[in-house]
Image (cartoon, rainbow, N blue to C red; front, side, top):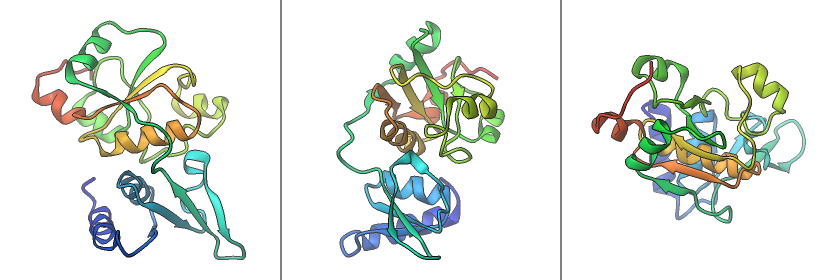
Length: 194
């Protein structure tokens, strides 16, 4: 998360966490970053339509505000180590998916963990709430089934946590995170697929 707006929003959220019950956010990146911190994030005028599919309308009229909370109550993601992900990448299983949530530009620049699917949380935060047909049209492959194991990673572990929460909020129960994400993968010399 290197955009200045996200950094400012996180700094604001950190300063006001004790005194505010929510933080307004205006972009998908803000929503994901703030939600990962456990705060309730509110999006004005449906700016992030249907994120996670668990929004609730707070006020009517032309200035609608929706609240989305990715906080507690949804269970914890299984934590995967470098070795765990290395085994999954070298011996793929049909019901296990490694999911890269970085932007397509990031993936193109660095490559990805072998067998990983790119489902960007930044450009497609609704990927787990749209229909299966729309998902396949958008991404060119079938969405992992709700019963499948999904292991999320990004660059440093922040967006992957948000993606895991969004997936879990939409009914995926077997969700995990590679907390070291791409930074650990590349530092430890993990195989790269271009």
